[in-house]
Image: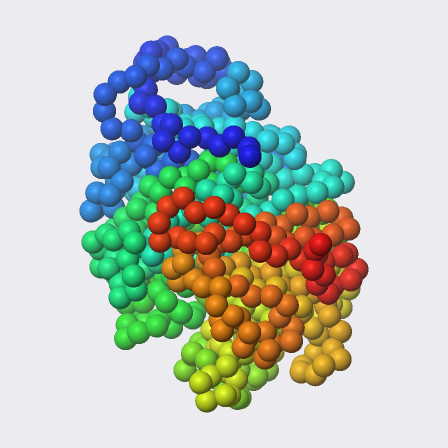
Length: 522
């Protein structure tokens, strides 16, 4: 198993070189400054992260917070800006530093730091760290995307739905040990609920449902203190999208779940978006403007894969027929309904038509393919929060890729179960051609330990012929990608209600380039 950075290995350090001498040494690209132990709180308690890698650039992140759970949301920092130094090296001992600089951690941004480092070599692993307030952060590992023609393989991790109080983030630790090239986090990174829900509580904490900016900052800080999550962020770059719980359960556009006015909800969304950008390794282009945040984007992994990271919350119509699971909801099939909004749909169409990648990959939140759930009365109901409540919108997305006979893979979170499914063109019927594959990751902790009871599996498989596999355990996905095959491994942990669970592979499915159906790996 690859060696992991110690989740508790942050040293308390201070600079031996000070004042103008230190600044001059840094400006002249001198060797890394020496440090020694000192007393005082570590401002890097929330760890480090990286994300959105390009062929020559990557985002580095940290946030200064010596008291991360301070109730005001400012992490125990003074109300002033602070200088933070950063460096990037090609080795983990930082003897070969290739980039270094200084950035300002602004008090207005809760001292979060986003550094867009350019001038890097494509397809290469780098190591990075920060220095501020006499301390040095733990090191992080990241990598750039390959250049066109450079990538012959890739390993992507896929995760979603980590609710702190319902379990331990053991799955994150196991994913870190697999050293993925990139982690796609597909939403529900946090949950907005009060800290003591009706569901079984494994890790209780005292905080009500979050609404204000301070609330959201405090909730993210609690999650980021988790050593397993810190280990994953320190091991691989992330590409993130939010789902509903980063704001409010099942929100749709400017429509909240419960009895909030539109003005109240947009104020809450403004706070949630601001905290989200502060804590995620996102580029400046994703900085929110009030209650708006341009999150959708594409990432090129050479010409091996193009990853389209979608936003299925901010621009969608409200869920039809009152949300929930519905039988024969005519509103769901209305041709004018949208999941992505006109602008995002047009962007996706334009980018897809320009793609020269072997694999076109949608990184998105809610179940994409056809899905029905059996009701106690024997009828089948479709979940309205998924693409099954937006049937025409789904058809338009499929047409975008099938018109050019692309190798389409959809990666999904949200639903707290593993699924493997084939995507078909057209409406209903047994003879429709396969046009792609959908791989749905289960939750990291949401839903608790889960079960292997066949009663949780058999009714779904019997009513959904396009679904080849489902599992009600916690875990994540690992995708091993070559030019000829896309292989998805369904990793499972048997429990999350106590720490230390092992990991196993329950299934692996292969898609061959040019043949969109699923094949069970031997």
